[in-house]
Length: 491
Image (cartoon, rainbow, N blue to C red; front, side):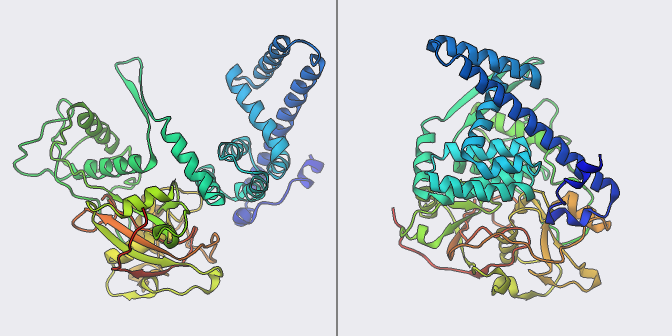
């Protein structure tokens, strides 16, 4: 036991504050030991598969294939999984062992787990990266996987692989559009799954409109000539009213960031998830919207060179969770039917010496204006609690130093917190950061906010903002301006 403890690597920097708690320190040691044990198990199974292949190397192909299947079946029995799952695990880890030495070493040392290894392999192989870029991905991923939650790491991989080779990314996107489909899976208890594989930009627009419509049902409108209950006994759809961002203090509903909950004060007794399901069903069934709001707001960041056609770097969602190729970003920005709100953002390579425009102003009053809220959404991307990936568009704008305690309404004192972490902070269990931790910045960009929401609210509506960089958590590295400019966009 003493030898195992002494060989355990120290907690990574982002967890160092937890090392003083004995229970958490013990949990870290067990975590590392479990990961090392998992790596040792996988290594032994890979060796067994390799030995089986060597034993039957001189046999005909059909015999070699059946011998490999038998070896995988034996591995599946050890892992307690299906043959298909065991095949996927062994194939993925074999590629990691051969192609991603840094990732494999981190796995064997107990610094990262199997899901992160598999995501790294998927990102490297599906992107068809050349050897030098694959090596670059391997080195960066081995480091990033140690300090990001699994969801954060997935989003980072999406951004990083797209930026490594923008042309290859655009080709891959074009190729994948040929594989789009809709699938129905009918289950028991009178329920079914509806699965669709469609372009991300289309999916994002549907998602935003659906959420805006479902929230709008909280406020019934008068004279609903085109309304009917989506489910028996349910209330009819209401007017388009987006949920506002609060500047501070827990609201009556502690879980508004969770789509499975609803406001007990609302007129509609259904949960938000139920309303979204009912609306989508109604839209697809007969094309009617039943007086529900259908406007959406999509916020994306586009490098300026991409917008003008000088480069083909992909555009990125404000919450950093998805990317779109350059030609789609230019097409969206040039759409004459969309109402664009443009912003200009830029970053400096030295994020410790950044300048600010909108983000440096001091605002009178407790609640930030629309332009500042938009800037904060692009700056923060997601809830600023470590490991949380809830989009900043769905978060509260919170004063780090409370307004009633003298906290100012400035970008430096404001951050995005989902309702769960906002309440945690309000009760003293979550504290603002003492130091800044940012990702590397990128080139200057321009943005457009395609907003069809009349009140300019950032929680529902079609917005396209292009900014710069991959600014990370607590990253005030934007030079941000409201930019009423127009470009001659490249086709």
